[in-house]
Image (cartoon, rainbow, N blue to C red; front, side):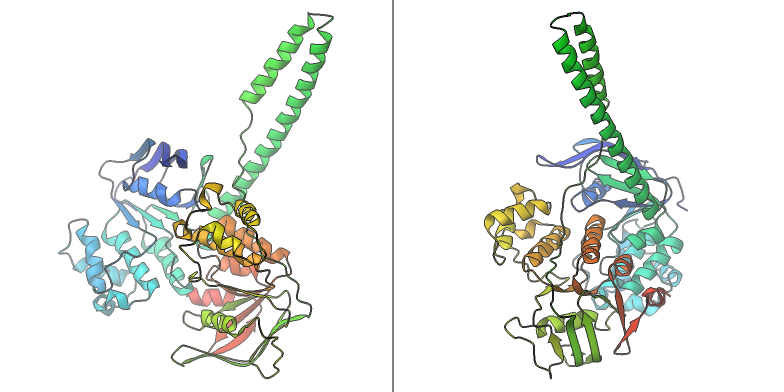
Length: 510
């Protein structure tokens, strides 16, 4: 436990970026639990964290903070300038934050505590994988900085399933301190946190339960409020009709004006005390449902997948993907999952009919392929949102404006360059453009990496509801279980079909 009671929260807090509201009238107080902070992209989660740590100042309200509170933090992105330092030198920076830069023995104790080979401390930080770089920064913040509370912004970014398992073990056991964690990984939140805060346009909603239970309760509250609001509106319409009748009757009997005014007063009270309901921003994340005439979308035969330097990763003797199949590719980090999707994307040439019976990759002649690359390298960052969408086949500027609005992009922003968008917004923009290509086969490489939970659920619903063929790679266990109809695991360079991903997930966690 923390050495003393940590008090951190907000009261009536509001933050505006210019005239645009980021969040408003937010109040909450953290306790000694591990708390999840959840909200859709653009809700202001990262800004709220920066206000809590003092990096930004609120426009209204106040941050509640106990005197001399020590907060450990981890930003979304790894800081620059660390690559040429040793791991020990990077960890020493955490000690220096508390004036203990000479206490190198604490680093040795930490490495032993988290089960890391002491030799790692002498490695160059830049030689570590992106996942282990992030893990070491988390360990430094959680232990060496001796925080009273730990704030983590998207801690699973850049982590594979094995590293996510390591982090879950650390946060659930080794690092026994209060935490505030922002994440879109639903399974991670369910495993690690036991309190949940939902940040929405109508404020913060707090629950003393893990994410999935809290989410169900919040949806029930929203549904109950909406039902109550409908009853109130029905009663107002009934009273308005009654007031209109008394107005007519009062022409002959002025005494009835009193009854009319009484009804109008009742209407005013209902309107003043009406139940507030929440309506999230309308953001459609849709996939096209282009039909493939034949039952087979893709056939692979004698395909070898290799690294750019020629090292073999996967050999596929024979594989058939049927129209409507949603196939999850499972495999350890470095097994070749993303490389396989890239190889399939490169093999597709819309100018060819793909009839070659000798080809290792044979697409249905009716295939229209869409490839979502997790790095989003193909996005023209200098182009405006409107120009990017309007450049799609057969799309007009009017179509583009309408579609961007449906996807949740405000009209005032559609002339801005794509570079100004958050990564979550870029993902939604790419899915919108892909839809306009009218594909019937999707290759998706980590499609949920930057999507908020609402976006993930929308993508799951689109995959489930349409006759879309899809091969995807994802570290998101919840999404993988929900979206896939088939599971292919890479084992020793071969694709093996399995009934469920659970054994693979468990092996990665062990």
